[in-house]
Image 1: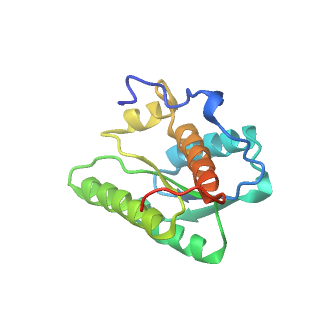
Image 2 (image 1 turned 45 degrees about the horizontal axis):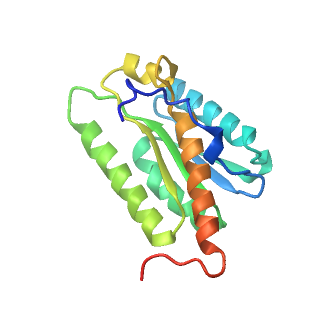
Image 3 (image 1 turned 30 degrees about the vertical axis):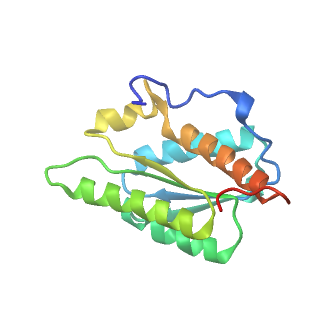
Length: 171
């Protein structure tokens, strides 16, 4: 659903688990820092609101959005995480660079999540301009950082539920 139709910061507490036992990695791109810092602040606040301990939230800064996937892989090699959240902002410019970066990050996080079984959350803004980025980093469309945190909590809960003895999916 387009963020113009749904506020990114609105969600139902009904489906959210207690995150007190969760370990979450958050990787944040420094490119467009005025936007990504707002994404991180909202993400962290949402995780803490749902009982994720501050000591269980690991923040890693990377130079740009393209580096999000490699940092996620490095973090997963270092320790066991219940979910990894990648936050960034690639604003469309005069060339097609944004398409290559956005697609690479999306594909890389999907591949990493499938390979490791750890949910890798795509919290990358892909706006056409600065105003759209601001609208999605706490502006009129809410904050993508909140949405990413909620997604991580829900996916971590699904992962834990399916890891319980006797629960199987697939073949």
